[in-house]
Length: 132
Image (cartoon, rainbow, N blue to C red; front, side, top):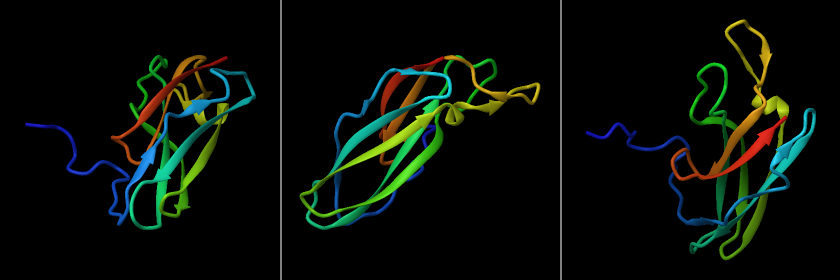
């Protein structure tokens, strides 16, 4: 028996369909106190104008304590006319990586992070970056 939910988080009904390009980031190194940009093109491939909610998740695979596999960090709702393409961009800074550890210290562990972007929590494309 499958352990998957019937509908993933963010799943919604729409009268149109959207296509996502491959995401890209400005750099794969996040300097302490800095930021990086993630961009993705979203096209309305359907027959009607519509709104799409683009979701951004982050995962810290090597944290000192267990972290969520997918942690929603940002989203953007964009209107896309039929046949058009919109570039959606997110800014990722070190505050998006922070969490409270078992000693109630707020911070993040430098190292590898995975950022995921897509229309819902299941259909995601991922990229790797490193935080100092």
